[in-house]
Length: 327
Ligand SMILES: [Zn+2]
Image (cartoon, rainbow, N blue to C red):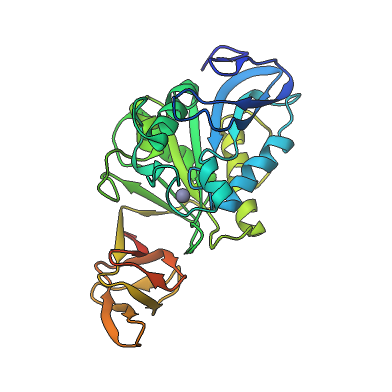
C-alpha cells in the first residue's frame, strides 16, 4: 500500500477527503496537443490506490461513461484510499470517432504497451499512462467494450501467469463480476508491444481489462455492468462499503481466437454474439459487391463468440470476430 495521501508526479499532493479535477498534459513531445481530464477521489482514510481508465479506444462509450459516473459518485468522505480516474486516454480517437487506432499515427494503443518515450503518439501515450499512473497504483482496471462496429458479450481479460501479481489480477477480475474471464498467455495479435494489463503486471501491479457494450452506442446496461464491477472491486479491497451483490464466479476461458476475412467485401455472419460454435462450422460468408460468394468463414476452434463485427464492410484481413475457447 502506498503512503496516504498519495503523491503522483503529474498531479502533485492529493488532498485527503476531497474530489479534485485535473487537466493534465501528458509528458512526451507528441502529446502537447490537448490536456486530458483526470479526477482523483482521495479518501479521508488511508487505503490502496486504484487507477481506472477508459478510452484506450476512443469509440467505446459505455466504459467512458462508467468512468465519468464513478468520478462523480465516489464519496471521499467515506472512501479509504484513493481512486484515480481517466475517462479517455485516446482523445484524438474520441474526437474523430476513430475505430481501433489513434488517428494521429494509425496505431492501436493496446498493441504497443508499455510504450516508448521516443516513439509515435500512441507509444508516448501508453508510456506516459504506464509510468505516470499505472506504476503508482496498487491495482489497475482498464475499461473497454466492443468498438464502433463490434457487438460484444461482457468479459474480462488478465494475464495467465503463476506470479502473485497474476493471482491478484485474476482475483480482482473475478470479483468484478462479468460472466466470462479470459486468461491469456500470448499476445492476441502479433505487434510491437502488448496490452495494458501485461504492462501493469510487468511493473508489479495487478491489472485487468473489463469489456462491456459496443456498436458505437451508449448502452446503459453496459454502463451499469462496468460501474457495478468497479464498485465490487473497491468493496473487495475494503475501500468502500459493499453497494452491489456479489456476482457468480466467471466462466473461465483460456484462449482467444480472432477470425479474419481473406477477401474484401460484404460480411454476412451466420452466428450472433454469445453463440457457441464448433471447430469447422461455417460461421459466415464474405461476398463481393456483385453478390458473388468470395469465401465461407470457418470456425477455427470450439468456443463462444465474444465479439462480432456487425458492420458489413470488410477489408482483406479485416477482423470478423473473436472466439473464446477452453470453456
Ligand atoms: Zn477496446
